[in-house]
Length: 306
Ligand SMILES: [Zn+2]
Image 1 (cartoon, protein in one colour):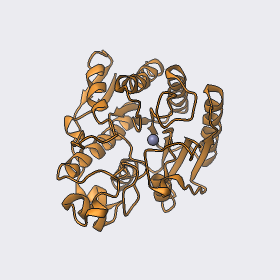
Image 2 (cartoon, helix red, strand yellow):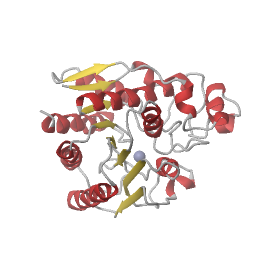
Image 3 (tube, protein in one colour):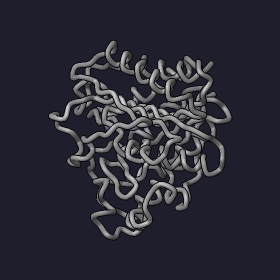
């Protein structure tokens, strides 16, 4: 049985924004038919959880809408609905992590928000739910070290910037390296990456398929093993590497991404490290295809965790 944390309040109305927030509700609906998946509602984060990671001025801006440029730095039009929704999505990530520590595996139907920095948002990411989760668990002494396996199409620059001052966090980002493509983000810094000992990345060349992707994943998992196995893995299972995604220069189909997910789960299970995963990006025009990729992550987990 896999517990997946979902709440209808995750989705703040964003007008006609590119971000397909409806995919979370569609995936939750599909999962109701999975006998070995249980949906549960998380509690929202408290402001104190955000303040371990994010600057007070930035948190206040997202809550109040002022100053507006900071409140909208993630590139969403600000509304009073955003703050409660991001407390819930962060709460989903934290709940899944706690559940994974008990059960070995869990998921949250949220994004990890890997572009969010301490003092501003970027690339549709308001608060970094991954690092907020890690620091909440550390504050309660539930974990010592945590690793993030970030397989979104985009480089996890926010998580990397936050990892620089957190030696207990290892961030691995394997991303599609094509800056000429028409990216959803205008922020130049989303495309700038700075690696360090505990925040490393591997770029996949244009046109990379299953062999290159799994090879990069094995290399990355080897680096993680060399760093030291953590107490918890957070897996950012992006759907935007998918070949039909408008931003993807990679040649990865549904089966390839399912093989990717399976490899991550086999690693976690084989090493005996609890794992919680989140969904991350996915912008294919036909939302049903994005939902299918995310649903396949559940199928891969159900295959591995019997
Ligand atoms: Zn992405």
